[in-house]
Image (cartoon, rainbow, N blue to C red; front, side, top):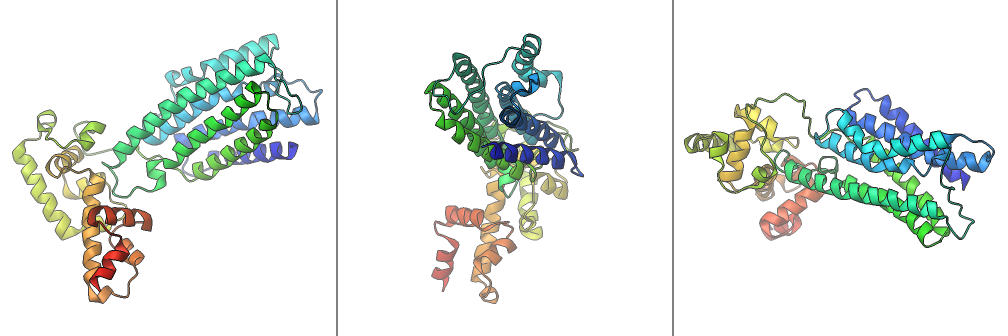
Length: 369
């Protein structure tokens, strides 16, 4: 079992090394790098206790305390990707108060709960209490993180015309549930006195480290709160992004001005076909049209009763339909047509096509024959 401890430790520390040495390192990389160190320490602790049980290092004996940081780290990591957290402040560090308090007590008094032992059928009360506290904190943070990800999901459809996994942050939903599940296993092992679950907990922890390493090394910030914009008004909130009613009285946009923007938008979409760019965002469209982003968002929401994602993809589906009807493109595959129409993968193309036409692209093409 000590081999698994070393595997997990080395993986976490290598990930930290690569994150800190990225050429364009951002705040989310730094947060994940530090978190990886804290995830590696319990594994290092387990390896040290098995190989050199006579060593008494307080920091390595605190392996049941490090999980107190996992909820706060996940919260800050998600916030750094969505733009809610742009720098680490004293307010952010308050989340780590339980970890700092318990660590100080341990260093001063030398107290620490007896580490769980897979060979012992009964776990101590201290382990059960610590496990319950860790699990409770993780569950609280998980709920808050899912709410933040829900807000993010509502926001991205107003900004992006394609929604790959690194923009929707769908992988973080699975990862949040997975990290919580890791310590649910540990709690159940202690509460039910099932030492065999300890081995499963170790496998799950290493799987969580591997998952965070794989996705975290590829992930960039989705919303950059520091990026300059041409707007003079604040970005619309989530409700404004999905609203279907005019909000001109709040933004200062008159109905007459909204009419002008809507007409310009129709003309621009038909003549310039910006939707063919798979990376099109509301920001790039507003700059190309020389229209403030929040005005453009409001017109799309109020006049067309759509979010930006749906608005653009309707044009893309229409372009795909025209391509399928074109005899000159008869040899092109459905995937070729999807890419040429502005989609960046097959799955969202199929989903959008069926939603708007009631049939799959293949069925539509067969009906044309």
